[in-house]
Image (cartoon, rainbow, N blue to C red):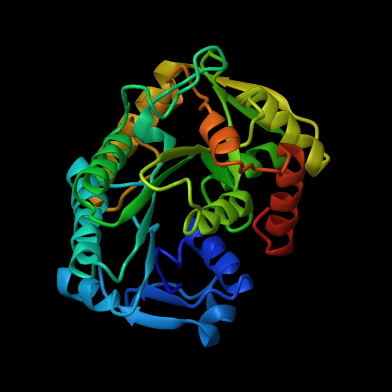
Length: 327
């Protein structure tokens, strides 16, 4: 096995690289010249670097030379306009699939990292199953669903589509703002709705992704990956506060205010030409009924699991944030 990994310089990708190197899997990284080396520097002597871009078909086809498996983790989670999601997430996946097809039969399997956002909301009473009709609520979610379709409809190699729940852990910046708010004594709540969700600790996700490269029963499947614990936002804040050793008070932000802030952020992003994680797209996700997914396929059919308990994952994340001066 020789694996090409895209998105290695990012949060999830860097943890997948950790696991690949620990398992001594020969690995090729597809990087841009501008890609950060911050989290992958220790592994660089043991991996092969090939430079290219998701927007450059020729560089992708060159990158796959001698490769037998691909993990496609690269993409964007924020954009100024939905066309950027389409260009990078959807177009990039299309070109990855074309490159895989051009290298058949050498490339045997593609593992694509999607998101539960592609499937849409779910609650504890009606969790999102992989077999449900997809109902994404955001431009990001729609781009991930469209990317899944690029894989399932056109890839001539075996493929596995992975839909992680909200991912947290060391190196993550998305949950960092919540940790900072709690560390200052605030537990933000958006409106009166108590949204349910499950999460996945990044190390658990990385272990599963690498295992799926060679799992005999996974070919052609879409798989939700999440910790079985279901929590509300309030419970998540309580867990973070317990780990950080702080007392918190609830800060309820009316949905009208949240929407206004998201609208302003969207407008500012268009003016400054700088994408923001806060925007109307995020508002639609924040006001969804919940983000709970069913993991029966993962646990019963594939016999895999996410073993890290939420409290333990938060403990490890907080420890890393503190050691690196992030909180």
